[in-house]
Length: 305
Image 1: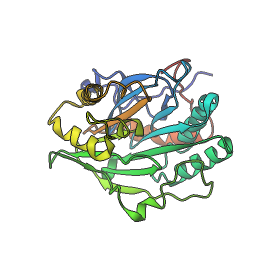
Image 2 (image 1 turned 90 degrees about the vertical axis):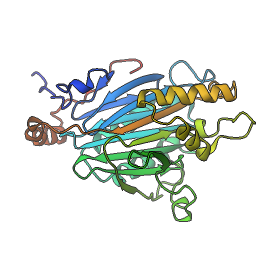
Image 3 (image 1 turned 90 degrees about the horizontal axis):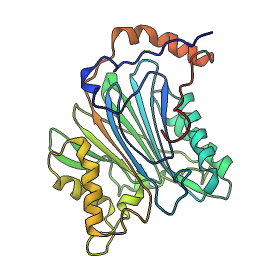
Image 4 (image 1 turned 45 degrees about the vertical axis):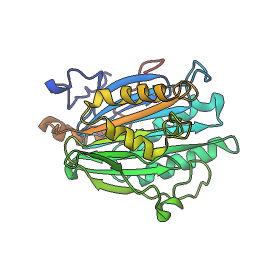
């Protein structure tokens, strides 16, 4: 029996022609290999960069990244994780993360996903390691972005209306600090989710701590505040030029910044892409087909994505 055709809500949009990848409904894409790609989604444009350290194996790094799009394209989700102490188990953990993204692909509330991922890490990792994780969920109908940082650097947001980069949430909040433990440390941990309204062309910069622990020209750590100042200094750079500019500056500041640790980052831009009528109509079929196991689980081809 042939698989049902998966319609792509962005395939007919000329504005997506220059993107490397165009996400389809009910698709989960990502992995743990080196990548530098632009991805068009309904509601979000995403630039993903992951460059494992030369000290890590050729089979993949210890940073894991995933994107998903729901049955209609209304829910766009990203996951960025920095896995520590797992060694050769990273490919297995990456597949477990992909499965969890798939199971929760149609849920607006990401609390169940974060809880499931934490429990999975606790069961799989044991005493061998843990991971920091950053989850974002963009819900197109309300233009809201929900964020959960599990022992992970908080994202930075560029408000187009204000022309400035800011912390998406207060990194010094005592209330937040008690519920941001890394994944796998406590199977019963609870996590706070912050939700904010965003507007077209707002940008969200998500990164692993390899960026914030990079060194300035004077030898001190860049930190989240230093990264915010760096992004602000670029002014109105096109989104596709922002991360190359960050890497160039860090390498100029200190030659070891780019090589000593793997660096992974995502840049999200809110777009004005709408959901076509056909995708609204096909959403129930995709949803129930996925629940019944009839809708194909789209996977990237073997090897690096």
